[in-house]
Length: 80
Image (tube, rainbow, N blue to C red):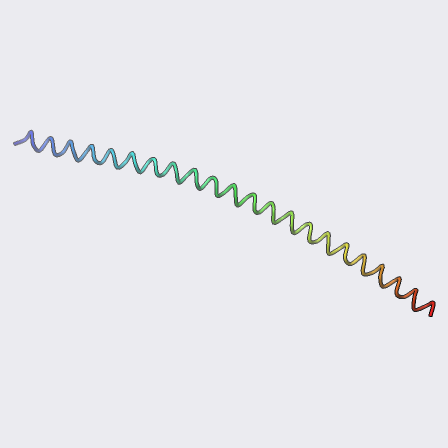
């Protein structure tokens, strides 16, 4: 009778070990996916920062062109 109990206990222990092994593999996969997502977020953040800088530069250029146009229009008004 005690041998059967030991076999059942051994089977349950083996099942627990198998479950733990599978969970450890899943944890490793999730860690890798998390690391990959963190890199994607960093890349997107860098891209956003670059776009914000480019946008600011373009706005500054637009203001310069508008000012030049105002000056030219002012000179045309002076000629008339």
